Amino acid sequence: MKTAAILLEILLLASFLGSGLAKVCGLRSQVDNFRKMGLPQWFRVVTGLMQLIGAALLTAGFWAPSWSVLGGIWFGFMMLFALITHIRNRDPFLHRIPAIVLLLAAACVILLQASKLGGFPG
Image 1: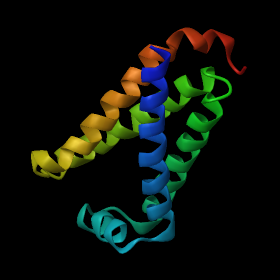
Image 2: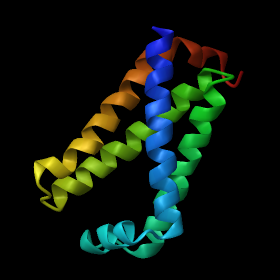
Image 3: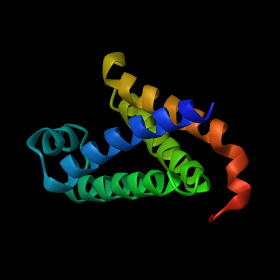
């Protein structure tokens, strides 16, 4: 079970580290996505920073698993709001799949590591 949690944490870490850096650095596709959704560009930067914070939480979780739970909760809320945004914008279902998959991965990390939360922050 521990291996599954670590693999999911690596998936989330890689996904959000890449996505967060792309948003903060202003990658054209990210700029265009936020424009298409009608969101201001400052919110793209804030979203990217939030993704990088979550990636830091998951990274800390490799040494102290309770931090992984917080990272999972952090990303779970982010993906829930991302999914709501896709629904509100009437995006096709295919555009919603990444948010759904990452939301489920975050939920699995929370469930697999939940017993470690009692030891927070260590």
